[in-house]
Image (cartoon, rainbow, N blue to C red):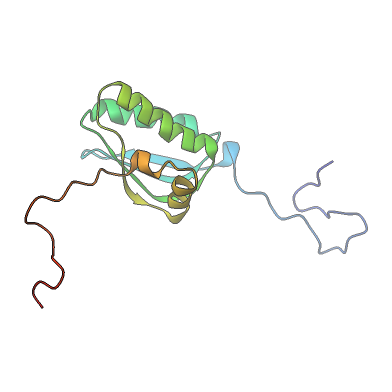
Amino acid sequence: MHPLPGRPTDPRAPAGDTVPEPPVTGQDAQMTVEVTPGGSVVVSGEIDHATAPALYRDLEAALRAHPEGVTLDLAAVTFCDCVGLRAFVAARRGHLNGGRCPLALGPVSPRMSRLFRLTGTWELFAPPIAPRQAGQGRRRGAGR
């Protein structure tokens, strides 16, 4: 049996020894998604099993509205679980299957950056690096 939040963990425990409040999840989780006219999808808050379906629907709508592709702004995401990550991957897959450009990462919170890197999904969303054109770039020792 699990102790209730704010209740002593053990009847023999001192009165001040309580279980910490659990993180906000499920119906109490807060997430907002804003699609800008320029094709950015700005996500903030917590992405979990309760909010991921809405995120997926919003991503799909953004991709339909901006067939040239969208940029994800995840700078204000405070939490994302595996279901949230799956929403991004599934939207990307659907986007590629439609023959459209993939989702690209814009600003990303440290937590989202860590999640993408630990799961090996960073490369799926990172913008492509353009090859250097001849004559561009700095040469070693040049201009010194």
